[in-house]
Image (cartoon, rainbow, N blue to C red):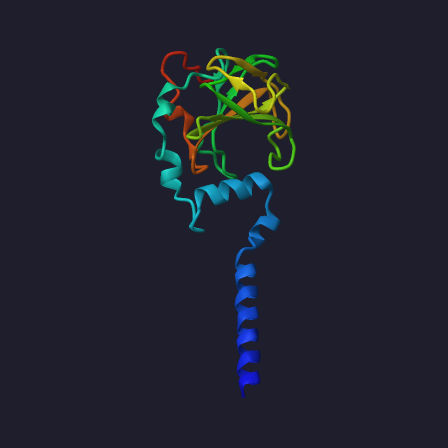
Length: 198
């Protein structure tokens, strides 16, 4: 009898351990690229869906009020509300080679050339601004910074191009908060230096 109880307890322990291990595996991660996985996990730590209203209007840290325009010349294109696939930023068209500037002080976290996690972005840079805000600059013709480099607001970091999934020369610019939630850049970019619409 004692042997049967011991065997049953051993089997129960193994089943619980097996279930715990299975619970730790994020199977969705195998079906999406690394950036999608990271953003999903940051935005939905409890596995909940993204709240589109919060994505468009809330959750911005106070430092977002200090951002400057990443371009000093060009035209505003499509914003965060685009029909079809999600478009979490704003496009600014400008001639190839137009300088792109860091919108705040920060540390360069990503420099990629259409690498894993950045499908369609082409040459892209992501800057971490104190762990509270991230800025992304993509479709660049050239990147002038390296991962780990400290940049100051207004430093030239890249040049406008049409790398990745782009039909013309432009900068695709995004702002995200610490949860990975996209913020509408047009709410926070200052009126001074505002680019005209084409």
